Length: 414
Image (cartoon, rainbow, N blue to C red; front, side, top):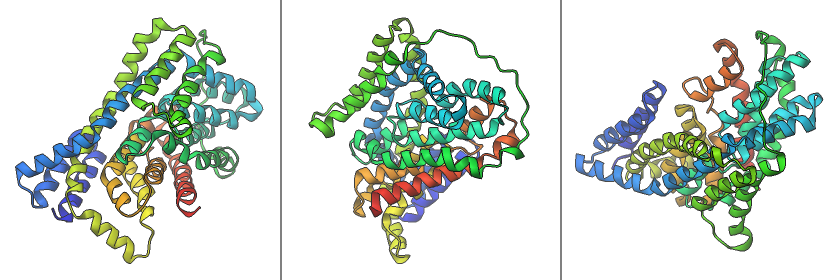
């Protein structure tokens, strides 16, 4: 199939997603048009689309099972307990560090980044009111910390990038450890110097946080520690426990430790709800990936990179960034990039672990654009108007770009 057909299909999908058409239907239509424009008949186009869906089906099952960990962390109160503990220990004098670190840890242990910000936001609002700090830098700290944690997490973006490149999840998570930690330092120490917090006018809110009994920090850490230990058994002890089992087991261990069995059903339903939308997206991604894999676009892109004397590995973080811009989602960005360009990265000699990690980091560059839900969820929880929320975008993008560059430097140049 010609490269032009794959390119037309991909660009059409991106255009429709930006126009806020359902990502699944955008990808499905893009795959169909791409196959037909590229020279396939209807039957062959459908066959390649189904073949692509088959390739991503293992990732779909693993992501749905990961909902057990996500749901139980939130509904048992463990995630909120961890956030409160870190803020309390670091104190108000280190407010930027405490907020960034809280979201870093929450996303790092498997909480969605928007949920992490929503969980920590009431604490941030209380501190901001007490210390008379503008809400804008507080939100930036939470988003920045969340982005750093997201590139080392067992969240859907990491799972699907690892699965599409057939790389071990724990090693993909570990590959971005140094970029994530250096990025966190950059967020805490450098971004406050760059960000003009005084230029943003935000209204003063009466903040009231409902008091609720949270589980202790010790039992709250059982689920994430269990997940880390189970996933680490493969590289450390050569005992493979698939994420399909490891993440649900960790979630159930957390439920047992916090004695929140009465919240189990609610947690399972919440986790399944969050993961179902991603699973549907993966089906759509599979269709366009099948068309692209059947085309000659890989050879064309490699030829272009070679003629420009660019390292083919640059395409890994770049594709993640472009696809995150198109979808305004870390998960969608990592999904589309890895499913579409993963095989090309392997053919170019880039290691599977490095490629998956770089695509994952690249997907944080522009995942916060206004046509996605993250932009509105994070702005809404802090009571921002659209104008003030838009002003954060360049600084969020700088954090994501810094992470993508660090990932490339550490994984390719060193």
